Image (cartoon, rainbow, N blue to C red):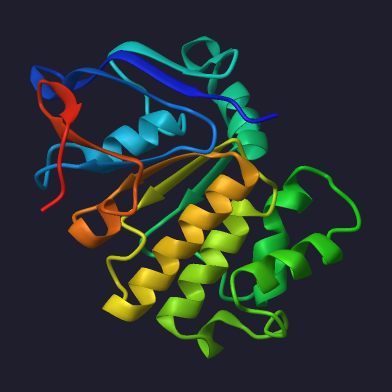
Length: 222
């Protein structure tokens, strides 16, 4: 079941150095929220906190009924495996696995059987039908990003996080990737949080928020 993301009073500090504080926002199932902000303000760090990859200094993160702050490292890893899809700018596909095997990884980690049909459907949805046996080095950058999106979505996570997913792509491919992310998010009722410097990418979101060192506020594109 899809769940809302709720963030309240979130802060991240390294010693006396404040990255951000008093960050509060929510994302409903099926909603696409883009987060903008100056370089170095902590946008990627915020995503890592939302995924339970980084600890935070104050505040709370809830996904549905789950309070991430109450989970230890193992609990966060299990929650992330079942409920989170993460799309990285650098793709992070495994070079020794073919496309279908890369996409199937989340299902395998969850112990799900008979994954071939789900993987094939996902590859078709991202426009990579028939390419499942190719190795990553045989694909273009745009195709690799679509593999990463397919892998992030194949287990139908309730929370999808994307860190500059169009940063390495040409404008045409970037547009197609953003259309795909938005369409798949809404089709499966995920809560999508996307970090981007691109006005074109942010313009596709339902809402745009700007992260600063002192909190989060609504923003406009352009």
